Length: 399
Image (cartoon, rainbow, N blue to C red; front, top):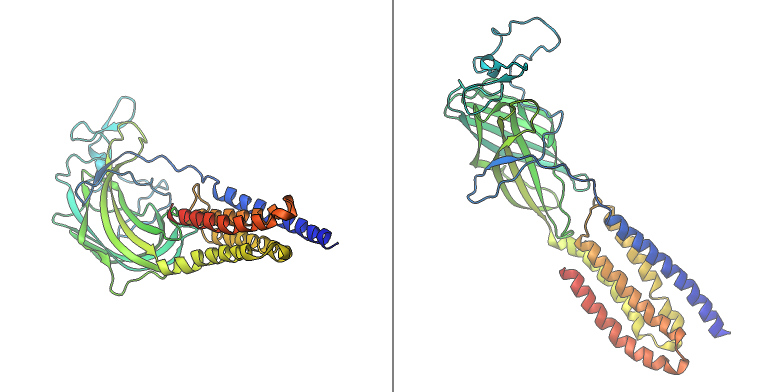
């Protein structure tokens, strides 16, 4: 009777364990779902502030970017009648463009054919771009969004083109305060929301890079070149990001060409990128992810020392721990976005699942072998399962 009751209890526990395993597999499958394909990068000619840095193409400009509100008169596109020549600034490109037989515009002199180029402007203004970050708040790693407040300075030895149109490809600007607006010096205080997709391959020991991108879409590199000012690219005093350890801040300059929008569209445009590197605190990662996972495994291994005559106690040690591991894993993946790869936390939890499965298999062996072999199974399982578990967990912590 006791044996029948014991088998009935074990059958129920097997069903619970099987459900936990299936639910765990479902969670792992969800983590492996591929994200939407990223847009193809556009060609770029890279000018870096560091020697030997490989060219890279930034993401395309986002629609609806806000620019610095320089005190200029807006173009009237609503149909008001205007003098085509009188209202155009002296450096306006379209004044010197030649109409082609097919109706397109092209410059016949200068290095660029684009009608937005200005072969008569002279040498381009080399603008030193400085950026001092005052605050970064509300960083949401799941959405890859953060709020930033910073000071942006533009300094040039020669006068800059009029009517600069500064855009922020990876952000939406909430407010721009113009502190200085002179031909050779401009200073803005900018507040906005920016997006930087996270890299979670090493989560929870991950490092993230936040970027602030600035570009001038109306003046090409024939009139304006953005040059990072390393001396004035820095954090403000007492700057910090809650929950993260600051690693570095650096700036790069790109000369980017847009995909051809019309015939003879060959003009490059400047883009400035500020990168902020930060890393997650290791102590927080250990106590929030690794310690709970190892506690689950250790509690499950304690059943290895329960003798065969206490089979009910032994069998009750595996299924609850497996269910706890699944729930713990579920809570972990809720705090990060879906990825097309396994994070280090995912690999750790796979090790936990396999360890608990080996534990439960060793217990099930007592029901498939004769009773006279129980002592032998007990001795072998007590050595083999902890050894394999130690090797497995160590491997999952390293890869």
